[in-house]
Image (cartoon, rainbow, N blue to C red; front, side, top):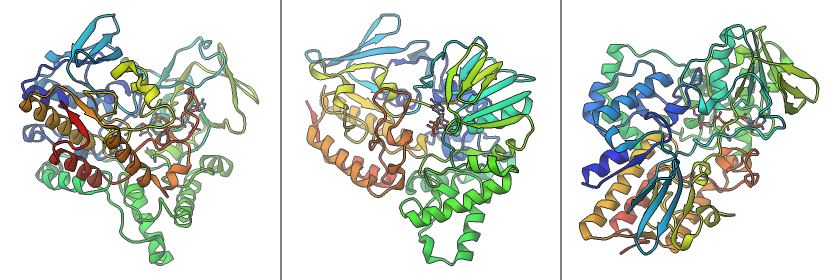
Amino acid sequence: MYQLHLLRQLGLRVRVFEAGTGVGGTWYWNRYPGARFDSESWSYGYSFSEELLAEWDWTENFAPQPETERYLNLVADKFDLRRDIEFSTRVTAARYDDSGRSWELTLGDGRRHTSRHVVMAVGPLSAPTYPRLDGIDAFRGPSWHTGLWPKQPVDFTGKRVAVIGTGASAVQAIPEIAKTAARLTVFQRRPNWCTPLHNAPIDRQEMESIRARYPEIFRRCRETAACFVHTTDPRGTFEVSAEEREAFWERRYGEPGFGIWQGNFRDVLIDREANSLLSDFVARKIRERVKDPATADRLIPKDHGFGTRRVPQETGYYEVFNQPNVELVSILETPIERITETGLRTSERDFEFDMIVYATGFDAITGSLDRIDIRGAGGRALKDRWKGDLATCLGMMVDGFPNMFMVMGPHTALGNIPRSIEYNVEWIRDLMAHMADRGLTVAAARPDAVAAWTGFVKKKGEGLLSNEVDSWMTGVNMNVEGKQVRIIARYSGTAPEYRDWCDGVAADGYRGIDLT
Ligand code: NAP
């Protein structure tokens, strides 16, 4: 939406194709019970419009999905965006025409659309994946994926419900479903380290105080490594006494948001011993909160340390397993063998359900691009370009794919996503303005520029414990053909370093990008 707004300001004709019936992307599709921000609302909205900041009030520190969807609808209306968006329109293919120096898109209904440039703003977590299980279509009751949740609210009252998966989406949904379901069975493969969100309402007075601090909040987000308001503590884990360390972790565990992950000692995500101490601390918390020791033990990860996968933020998640209507099944111990007409079968027994919830995640980072048949110069498929080695120019362009840009592409800075989106969108706008001013029609990333950026991304990933763990952040998804091997799927340097590099490229007349 922001890209449309900015490119229109340049006087370009812009057309947006959107598969949903409304705006919002992630916040349109992920309307499962309990879905909400786990970054502070006031650091997560758009920062580009003073008027919008003055007009919009967040009502909770971590806004629930309906509020965010309302916010994004307000943005669409305020900037009159809808007239250039075609809803219910999925792009199935994109082909670069060498002679016309333009892109031809194929739309779901077979129509074609031609444009000089194409911006892929398809999202890094928007291609939902289901388990590859026998009988997946056999179940006679309703089933939903958290990332494709229906608009009509689902009533779990008195129902027997299965949730498969225990990632960030499941961890938000499970406590909500457990409130009304007659029986909730959670099928967990690998447990995650989850920490409390500590959400709270924002009253009018507090909102005014936040509004007055917006410049300072956004400045802070620009300065921190991952654009969050939280930032790494400069001390090393072993530079403080055991008592001080424990007190620091207690404080972080008791504070709202990602502080315990993003605001911890500087070495906890690279030093095995430091990470192991922190993991022990969080494991103790889980044991304190879950009454049955065997269940607590099942909920504690054994195959990775704290913070080396994306940390789900929870509200009463662990306490849910003390409820008599909730059961945890470890499918590491008793694997799911098949989905049946009435439920599912594990190696141990048959379960009957009225509803199944798949909280099984996404074909992340490249999945939504892979689902479009993208062909660059000479008809080369993007999938083939990336086979075996993901490579980009600044996460925004790929050699051999002229005039194609990506917002939140692979190897861009992720972190606090809207902050990173705003930066990508403005950089792309500036490049298009530069081209328009000079009558240039083609922007093509050079292979040496792609190699340089990709080399830097790989270097920044060295030594990170997270790169030794299977997760969407290392490009692994067992449900997707060919994604069983870990790769450096994301940029893990700091956002300021990323922006310095991109700003430098622009200041050098778009060094490494052939403009003709
Ligand atoms: P996810 O973190 O990838 O979790 C998927 C879950 O499904 C995992 O527990 C996984 O187990 C399990 N699973 C996958 N395939 C399975 C199979 N065949 N059988 C059994 N279990 C299976 O996905 P997600 O929870 O949707 O979250 C994805 C990302 O979206 C998050 O990391 C976060 O970045 C974002 N998100 C953000 C928010 C927010 O901001 N508030 C909320 C939700 C999600 P394994 O771990 O064993 O593979």
